[in-house]
Image (tube, rainbow, N blue to C red; front, side, top):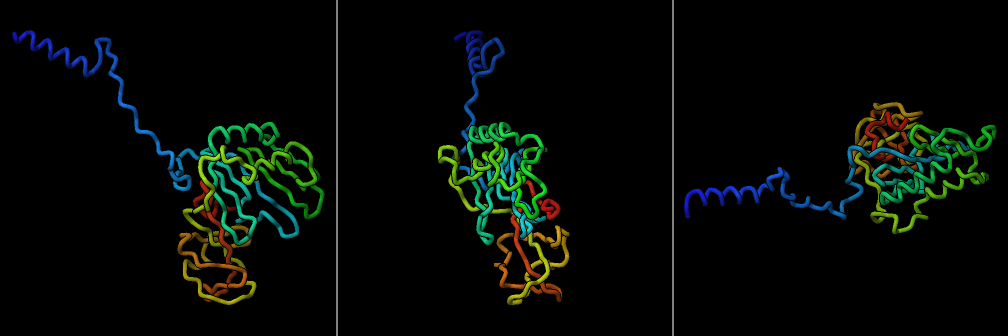
Length: 253
């Protein structure tokens, strides 16, 4: 074959591999699909942010004090963390599908939760109040069980027990925090044991408690029947898992 013909064929082959003479590249191979079985607990995208939260406050027991765990937190990724109704129980993590998150937020806006206001009288002593935060807006619903407005009705939608399985991207699972806040206060009696971790009296002030952080697997089992001795002083201890977006004791104030 003449040398000129060989050169022409080689050039044609190169054009075929790289694209046509319009400069358009040949279609690229499809990117690998993202695994549908990725773990919600381990997936913490940089852009994940809190979009909706509610907590109980007030009452004779002083619910919702600094360092307490919110009853419910929903994040932009679809992750939701709900506190256990058992004071000694662990929170549960849920994962909603994107469409379910959008519907929930649309319903919250329709209920007026995207603007700050109070529902009910704030003059009732020791009233239990549900505080809902949505972005920069804070809504207080005083004695929600006695309210009939859209805000109180919407609160039922934030109970994961009522979510359909088709709206969830994964099975509910125990929430596993990266760190646990150890909140130390005055001892209230009980069997005294030696605290094995960082000194309980040296930490950040969170309300009436002193807060230090520890790895969850290193924290000993605690309870009201146990008091802890640390550097010569005795304390009661309560534990509070850090939620997504929280990294220090200052985040719990």
